[in-house]
Image 1 (cartoon, rainbow, N blue to C red):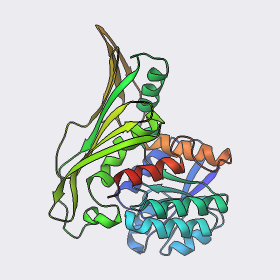
Image 2: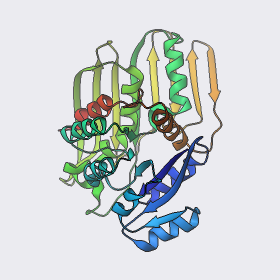
Image 3: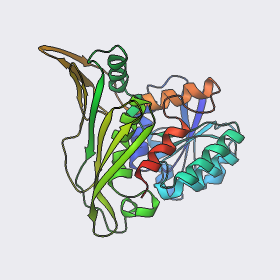
Image 4: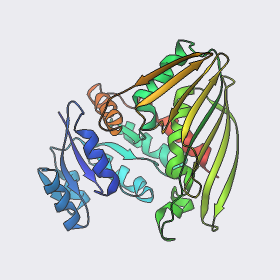
Length: 310
């Protein structure tokens, strides 16, 4: 059994907790927040064993094997290093951080400590992703030529919200564009050889919407969009020589379909939470004593930051 502690019991951590319920071989036993009322409320709501008002105290808990970091991205670098220094495996919520150089240093440190560090980006772990990968591997739509993937919404935050902090992994592409970016880059599993991008500025603070065009070494071209100022049709389209694959809300979808001429193949997957799959993968990697995820590797997470970095 892998025992987890949570640092940062905010909104997304509640969805993580729901996803943990269907994970085999893992259990959340503690939560830490500098806000005691919040930590105590979450502990009692989910019947955890304990809560802490100090991150250090949680990390000193010898029963805890792994930590899920759910704080804003500008805190990730420091917290990842802190968790690793106390001998904890780390699953850190996306975006990992805004600096590829700092990310490299964190992954090197994890390997030195013989611990697993993985970015919590659910897009390349879902049944929809695996089905798309299987269809492509079996040449179901012929040679892939172009992929179009988007996740962009419109919501106004307070101007002091971290999502607008350009130098700290803020902006639309870091916030949600990392989902289509992870889906596409993990699906292709091929080096990016060319990149072009254009963005819509948000009040001089960050990108409110960005489109990135990629060309992979295998010849496939992709368009990836992410934003917080523009509502788009959020889906992935994978175009091959003989047909196409599509899925709406692909990072959490239960459905995907393949269209080839007059033939339409639809797949439906039953699950409670899309978070379950990334957590299960992380737990399996720990049990297999892997130094990094074979799906969302250190190099892949670093590459995604490099693609977004200005």
